[in-house]
Amino acid sequence: MAFTGHDLRLIPRAFDHARRGRRIINQNIILSLLIITALLPLALFGVLGLAAVVLVHEVAEVIVILNGLRAARTRTPRMES
Image 1 (cartoon, rainbow, N blue to C red):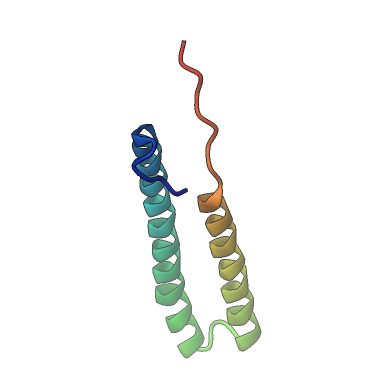
Image 2 (cartoon, helix red, strand yellow):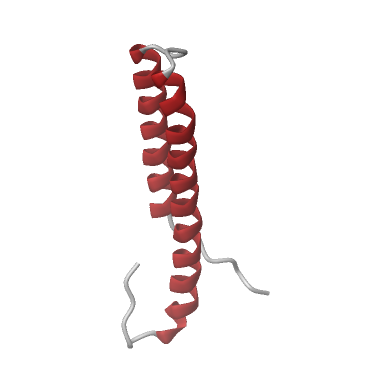
């Protein structure tokens, strides 16, 4: 979403969009950290094989991509009465 000085009413929407994007980015970071902390020991100690580790990694990639698509969506403005 781009805005310029031509319509300052868009600033609150831009801030809302930025806050929403930050939440989604933080979710992706937490997911990545959880996967690293869980998969690395499981793979190192032979609990999970290479195929399982790759599968979990690929599923996580899909989740991150879907989160990115969710971040790209814009909400429709609510009608005020």
